[in-house]
Amino acid sequence: MTVSVVPGIYSIARFSPRTDIPRAVFSGKGFVSVTRTAEEISVVCETVSVGALRPDSVDGGWALVKIEGPLDFSLTGVLESLAAPLAKASISIFAVSTFDTDYVLVRETERDRALAELSSAGFTVARD
Image (cartoon, rainbow, N blue to C red; front, top):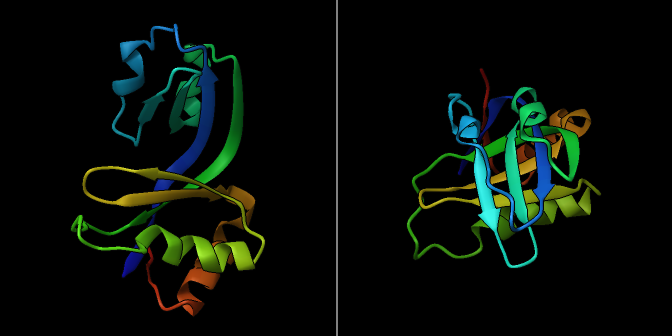
């Protein structure tokens, strides 16, 4: 499988579940993920966009790593195949899945080491 880094620095923001997320979060071209549960709303977006959202809390400084897809739903263990070598290297992740593929966020400061670990684990790392 091939992984690539999506350009930009990302933040993970938390909101009350009653928050109306502004449509402006979707106005850019970058990656945005919004997940709502009974307890919270989580938004992943480029850090430059998060200020206008006024989150309850935010954690910035993440790089976004994409598994090149689309991936078939019958595939198993895809996310685990990324998570395991990164966990073994003590690299924390935040995972996001879409219909077509999976993404993991790693600390920007750990990006190059994470890519090296994934390469060692057999992933092809697409470079800019």
